[in-house]
Amino acid sequence: MCQPTTEYLFPLVLDPADANAFFATKIAEILTTFNVQKCYNLYSWKCGVWNSKRRILMRKIILSGILVGIVALTGCMQDMQSLEKGNPSARHKVLVAGASSEFKNQVITKVLEALQKEDCYIKIISPDQLAAEKTTGFNAILLITPMMAGQLDGRIVKFIAGDPANPRVIVFCTSGDENHPPTDRIRSAIGKADAVTSASIASRTDERVREITDLIKKRW
Image 1 (cartoon, helix red, strand yellow):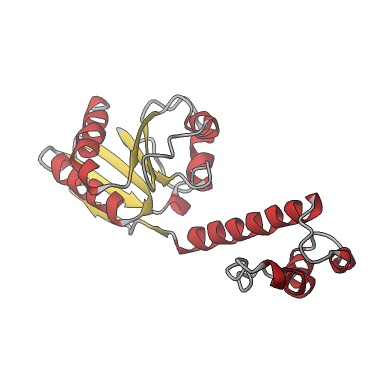
Image 2 (cartoon, one colour; image 1 turned 90 degrees about the vertical axis):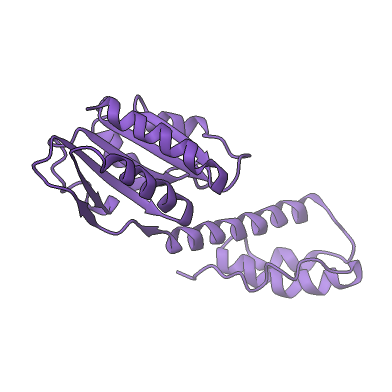
């Protein structure tokens, strides 16, 4: 299968006089790569004719570019590094699993600092390890996930779906800015779990720390 490419996504702002030649060559190659439709349809287009077919195909090209970007972002996403703090026989135990980012790390670091003032054992794992982890011994399970393209990390969603009424689960969801609140699909995936959502803005750190810490301590 051909791999998507962004090679031709950026030079799409052209003078009208250049449009026909561009669409007859470069877009034909893009559409062939993505198997949108047979290329011979492209060569019948005339210079300056902005008809419905062209608009439809342009939308498909733009959508393809967005999907490539999402795949790239997902591929670059890193999980939190495995870590254990405190005594495993402590009175309170907290399991943390999720993706890593500068904002998430700042929040979780401060949450851990607050929890360590108590008799608490904290274990951080990758979401890939959730299925094999014995979670019954933890008072609270904190799951951390970005909201991308209206969805959560699939591994987090799968874990929640395995026990959607688990009262120990807390979900911390982050987005790039305040203009992207949780969608209905995200709310459905979270289910009955307590959730804290936030834009990844440094000034929100302390507020999110208080919210998450309070939710964890309520499970003690």
